Structures are given as C-alpha cells and as structure tokens.
Length: 544
Image (cartoon, helix red, strand yellow):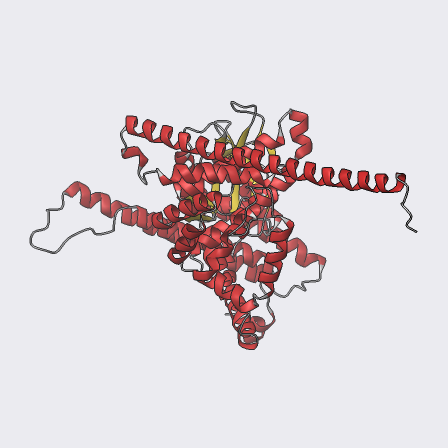
C-alpha cells in the first residue's frame, strides 16, 4: 500500500513518461488497427436469411479474437510493469542526485527491453510502433539504442540523424533489406491537437482585427491555411497525392515522383524512394553539372502549367526545397518533385474557365475577361486579372511580358489611388478557394523563375500553351479514342503555334514602331540642329 505522503512526494520522470506515452499510444493504435483490419470477433448474422456460418470461418474468427486478446493483454502487462518499475525504483530518490540518474538509466533500459520483447512477440503493427518511437529524438538514449534493433527487421540501416527537418516532420535516410534507399518522413507528435489550438487563436485574432478595423478582414486566409495544414498532417493522403501525380505524368520523362512504400507508411510515417538531386535554385551545382538554368525554368513552368490547366490537380507548395534537379533524364536532367502534402483538386468548371481566362488575357480580350469575372464571382475586380497575372492593364497595348508603357503606368497609378483596403478585402473574400491556391503557387513560381534568371515571358508562354491544351482536354483522357487524342493534341499544338506566331508578329511590329519613333525623333533633332547651325552661320540682315 502506497501512503498518502509517498503519493504526494513522488514525481514520475517526465522524459520516461513521454516515452511510455508514445509507446502506449502507438501500441493502442496498433491494436485498434489490427482489430479493424482483421475479421470481426463474432461475425454472426441473426437474421433468418443469413448465410450459414461454416465451422472453418467460425474457428478462424475465434482464433483471431483470442489472438487479439493475447496481444492486448501482453501490451497492457508490459506497460504496467514498466510504470510500476519506475514508480518503486525511483521512490524516495532526489532528482538532483547522482543515484537518481543512475537508477533512472537502469529503469529506462529494463523498460526498453520489455517493450522490445513485446514488439517482437506481437509483431506486425507493434514492430511499426517501436520503429516509430525509435525515430523520435525526444526519448532517452536507452530506448533508442535498444529499440533500434527493430529497424533491422525492415531496414538494413537507419540514420537516426535527420537529413531534413521542417515544421511538421523530419526526414531520415535508411536502407531496406533489399538495399533499396528510402527516405522516412516522421511527423512530430501532438501536432493535430496543437493545430486546433493555434487555428482557434488565429481565428480569434483575425476576428478581433476585423472588429476594430472592419476593412481589414483576414478570415479567408485563416480558413485556407487551416484546411491546407490539416490535409498536410495526413501522410496517407500525401502518399495518394504522390501516386496520382506520378500517374498523371507517367509519359513525361522530365519529372520524377518518388515511389511510395505502403507497407512502411501510416498517417504519421511516410516511407518513399530516396531520390538524389540538388535544390532547384542551386545555380552553382547546375553549372558544375553543365545544366542550363533557363531550360530548368522552362521545365518547371511546363510541369506546373500542365498540373493547373490540364490535370486540375495542383501541387500547392513549389518552393525550392520541394523541387530537386537530378543530372539524369533525356535532356541531361530531370525534376524530382517532393512533399505532396498540400494539393488542390480544381473543380472542372473552374479549370475550364481559368483556361479561358488565360486565353483572353493573352489576346487582350477585355470583354471575355469581364464575363469570366462574373463566373468567378469577383465582378468589377476582374479588370485587375491581367495586371495580377501578366503585368498589363486590361486595356493595355503593350506586348506580352514587355511591361507597361509610361502612359499606362501613370493611368494605373491614378486608378489604384481610388482603391481602399475594403476593396482588397472584398476581392480576396469573393475569390473561389481554387483561385487562392493558384495565386499562392503562381507567386512561388515567379520567385523561382527570378532566381533561375529566366524572364517572366517563359512563365506566360507556358501558361498560354497549356491553357489551350486544357480547353481541349477531357477530364477522363484514358477513355478517349487514341486517334482522337492525337488529332486533338495536334489541333491544340497548331493553335498554340498560331498564337505564338501572333505574339511574335506583335513583337516585331512593336520593335518596328519603336525604331520608327526613334528615327523620327533623331531626324527632328537633326533638323533642329541644322537650323541652329544655319541661323548662326548666315549673316543677320540689318535694316536702316
């Protein structure tokens, strides 16, 4: 019997408690998963029309049920034994003493050995649970050293030091028993609960700001962020996103998606093929490998343009750390796309309208732009679409990617003076959710092109090309007749070349106009200079 005073003075070691908590959680999840994946304990229907249960299926059900009870009992006994060991072994010892630290290390080792025996006896999901705990950096060294042997059942080697660490997970490099190199992404514990608290705080703050300053409304931003992060925390969804993207680009040798090892993947642990490469903005490495950064920029833009306009399935976080350049592939390199947690599946109607919008912006069809603005629900603000995406005003006469004239800049400056924060808030609130993802992705791509030294014209032409492809694209291309697909693609290619020719002609005309203006200006200056000289050389007549 433990006395009241003993219960008051004893403190369970926090670090060890966390380790036990991780294992209890993982083991509990493993038990539930094994029960859900296995047959029900007594799958007997009591209705009159039920199919008779065979003796074989009944015995299998009983065996599965008894096995589940044995596994659960073994887990409960192991954890209970460890808790009792900690409680009595450390009782009465001062946490600041050397003896406490020595005894704690001994108890950690005994507990780790018990858990190792549990995982080896129960196998299956318990081994996964042990591997998950081992990958965490917040456990005592006795646990990580003892449980590391579980990695040997799956991994030939496992680097406990992460090769990458982000806000929600860290990535470890490992080698499977068949010598396949893999990247193991392990999510930090407790993030889902932390997310709820943080989002509630952000929502409260955004509402508070809107209450004091009604024209500053950021609720749309909090909602979009919360939705994106909640999806990113599910590693099984991330794995499915990766597989879908790989399927979409199966015929494209320029892009590579790491293979998913489903048998080593859960909602919080993702195991994928390890792909080598350098970050897409590492210009020095590209020069060493003889890779042209402008060609890389074009490849990146074409991949993401195809995602947006053709597939309608968009990677929403294309920052440089998520795109690698590997010195392999048909053109001397290929792109490796990582981190498939944040994706947006575009509505098909929205995708078609967005294709139409880009076609209209390229051709400066102001009436079509305003009409599509009604479809998107932004009304009068659609006049700013060309400015946002192409850097031209809706009534611009300048060519694609060439910026605005001085006169257009002056007119725009005057127009923007009339806009208030209320207009910006109303515009952002009225945008469809799909549009917000595209705006964010497009912003990241613009920044990346700038780092690679490519002009924005590369981006604009890629969007123009795939907008045309998207307009002819069937949402289920696998069901199309192959001949019709070839014919359709040929027509789109012809339309694109016509559009490209049209843009080049405009460039030539614009250049010609500039040359003529420059010539006329210089000719006038020459005439004025000649008149000045003549006036000074001729004698001035005098009148008497």
